[in-house]
Image 1 (cartoon, rainbow, N blue to C red):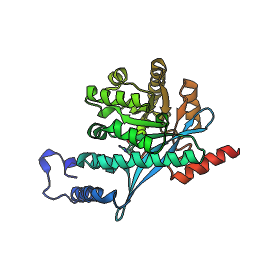
Image 2 (tube, helix red, strand yellow):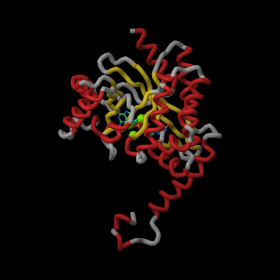
Image 3 (cartoon, rainbow, N blue to C red):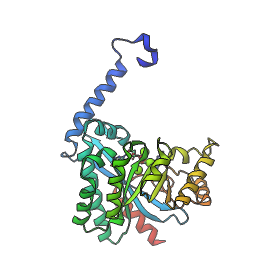
Image 4 (tube, rainbow, N blue to C red):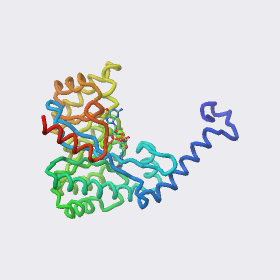
Length: 278
Ligand code: C2E
Ligand code: MG
Ligand code: MG
Ligand code: MG
């Protein structure tokens, strides 16, 4: 790539770079129509109580099935949607779809907590707490069944975020800091926000065995959560011995490929029914 050649050796045409920007342009344009064409789907990843392995909730994760390019990862399309502003309507669709799904599960007798990811951009531009309140009401859901996940790294305007969070808190929904430990303002965020859960970033959990420095960091985050009186959810648990270790350190909840990848909603029901059968 042009960049790798160093600043003084820019090529006039870089085919790799050209392909990347063509793809990005395609995604930018596609995003505008994706919702009305029903190209988004939500998959759900179980959140479990580590000690029992019991499913207590799910995290809704957006997927985009592009008509030409196939399945696009949210790691790729969410940042683009944030840039173009499409995140506002996508975010609305996520809230609506997740609430409808939760209603359906409750009607089937499955009482789960639904965690959704919300972009700070979306939180600020919509009248977000009011929108959430109306979707809950529309579906006859109690607010405790909904959990809002936000990444700390993007909460730059603390005062504004604090107001929004306080409104959500008043509404009764749960608030969770996603990817904890990888942002810039971890500790000041914790001091200022009414937080219910901390999610330990998978970057720490997944590599505990390979990088010996990560274990003390994980332990410290768990201690911090305990001292603050917030629940901890470890992300990216791929192995049983890691789950056991985390439990021993005092972390009660987790999610990861060990339990399940994100799956379509029918799969969640299947897993819960299997749980009840044993
Ligand atoms: P996140 O909220 O931190 O979600 C966790 C990501 O880690 C998910 O990737 C999940 O599939 C993956 N994961 C879970 N367990 C494991 C594991 O054991 N090992 C490994 N290697 N990975 C695991 P996914 O679904 O690709 O989502 C990526 C990110 O995109 C999410 O990170 C979230 O920040 C964002 N995102 C996804 N859906 C939405 C959405 O509806 N709205 C917004 N604003 N962001 C979303
Ligand atoms: Mg999340
Ligand atoms: Mg995360
Ligand atoms: Mg993340």
